[in-house]
Image (cartoon, rainbow over the protein chains, first blue to last red):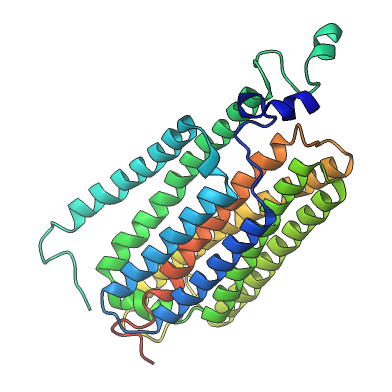
Length: 113
Length: 224
C-alpha cells in the first residue's frame, strides 16, 4: 500500500477520495450552523414572497456545501458529476413541468390568501 | 486465486483494474441510488409545493403550530452528525481505528438525539389533536386543508425519520466492522459510501426544516 500511496494521482488509494482536512470540515460545519441561524432569523422578517425565495436560497447554499465538501463531490470524477447532475435535471423537470401546469390554470385554481 | 491475492490488495475484486476504479464504481452506485432518492423525496416536495400554493392560508396557519425551537435544534443536531460522519471517513482514511469508532458512535448518538426530539414533537402534535384522521382538531379557518398540511408533514418527516433509522442501523454495522479493524487507510469504501447516504438524509432535512417550519412564519394569516 505504501507504494500505492506514494504514486499519487491515478495510483492513489481510494482514488476519488482526497484527504479533506478536519479543519475544513469544522469550517463547513460552522458555516452551516450560521446559515441555519440566518434562515431562522430571516423567517421572522416580513419579506413578502421573498421569504420563500430566501429560505430556498439558503437551503440550496447549505446543500451545495454538504455535497461539495462532506460528500467530496468537489474532488469526484466527471462521471459522478454527470450522475448527480442528471438527478437534479429530473427533479427540475418534475418541479418545473408541474408548476407550468398549475400556474397556468387561470385564477380559478389558485386562491391566494 | 491465492496467487492473485498475493499480488493485489486483499480487498481488490478481480473484475476491477485497481482500488481506485473499484472505489469509483461503489461511490457511483451509491450516487445512482441517491438520484432515485432525490426523485422519491422530490415527488413529496412537489405535492407540498402544489398544495401550499393552493391552500396558502391554511398551510400558513397549520405551519404556525410547528415548534421552531425543536426543529431548529434538530437541524443543528443533524448538521453536527454530518460533521462526525465526515470525521469518521477522515479517521478511516488516516487508518485511526479508535477515532473512527468514536466518530461513528457520535454519529449514532446524534442521529438518535434527532429521533428523540422528533418523538417529543410528534407527541406534542398528538396531544394537540393534529394527527390527521377522525380526531383531527384545528381551530383555524380551514381545518380540512390544515389537515392536508399535517398529512404531508407526517409523511415527509416520517419518511425522513425512517431514513435516519436505516442510517443508524448502517452506522451500527460500520462501527462493529471498524472495531474489528476491517478498514484501513487503503480500503474504507463502506464508510465513505455510507457517509454519502447519511449526508443525503441531512440534506433532505435542510430543505424540510425551512419549507415546513419557517417560510410561513411571517406570511399572511400566521399572526396569532
